[in-house]
Length: 135
Image 1 (tube, one colour):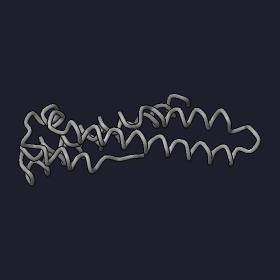
Image 2 (image 1 turned 180 degrees about the horizontal axis):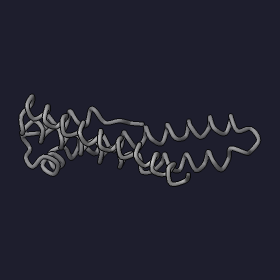
Image 3 (image 1 turned 45 degrees about the horizontal axis):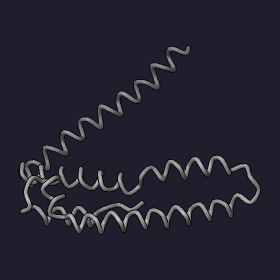
Image 4 (image 1 turned 30 degrees about the vertical axis):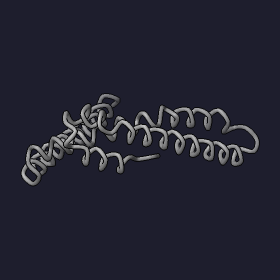
């Protein structure tokens, strides 16, 4: 009986991952046909750059917030504690995002060379920087 449950739940995961893989291949093919191979390369680098900058901006603060919420969930006055934690988290994310964006603008030329290989792609760097998620 347990073997059947394990096989059933594992098969759902396998099917999900297989569909994800096929959709990724189809998406890549459609992108290559519509924007060309150079466009796909630029799009990939912009996505990579946005993910790297976003990861740097967050600095695992979201994990720390979840830990603090879990630790204080059982304490008295939890709604007020939660409000203060969320406000502090928002302020920290805003400050770190502003610092990262300002530094990225100051070093835009060097960062464009690093991510794209040439400064002629500065416009794409700035587009990626404007798409930076802050949450």
